[in-house]
Image (cartoon, rainbow, N blue to C red; front, side, top):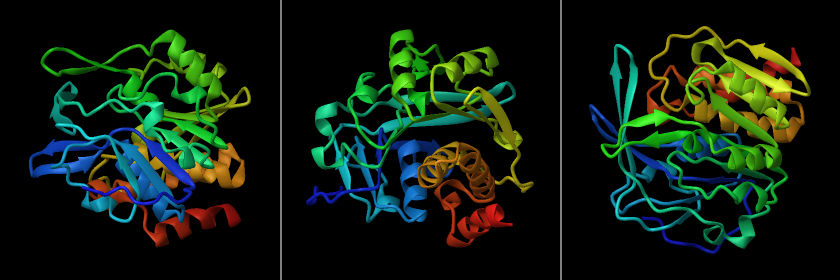
Length: 285
């Protein structure tokens, strides 16, 4: 378990639960926080994490990233099973809630703050209480519900909470699965936030900005594992948006980075220096 060290300023603060994912080959580290933090670091940023996990969490992949951990008996634990009708997801355990008081003062004005809930672990008022230059939100964890057996289903985002979050967000990234492919809902959300990007798997991404929308197609690759691709996309999008102030370019770049990630398994999909260089070069041609 990481020890709390004197906190230095960070460029990219990501807040949410890391996850333990139950897979046929054993427990693997997952969650938006893990994929996004490692992607932001690969892109050259100083990264900090505020999260909650149990003592057994396999967090070795996050070595070198400062972490503030709210202790928990168990990490948030998911099991995903592919079925003929799609993915069946089960929540076995949930770690501790993350409150404003858990976020160090030294990090509350980080240039990029990424709110990344996966299991309703973040209080809904956080978006209006943080003052980063760019507040990025991936709201999937606020759009999930589960029954007494842990069976996870998509659900409507609380109307008041979503209105507040969308109004304060600099950019929002979510997937078609998060909204059960309800494109009317996406249009409604796009009208209530500055920038909204919808990821659509192998179809790429659809960006809504300034009353316009544009689709970005990915590279054609052989997919090995799509796990974490949306989280990698989100981090790449937020980082590129912050550095260029150009949402179209951010979506183009993130689409290319995410496409390359699916050619490897799990956290091995974090972008390499060569992939980053190749994706950046496209804008210079």
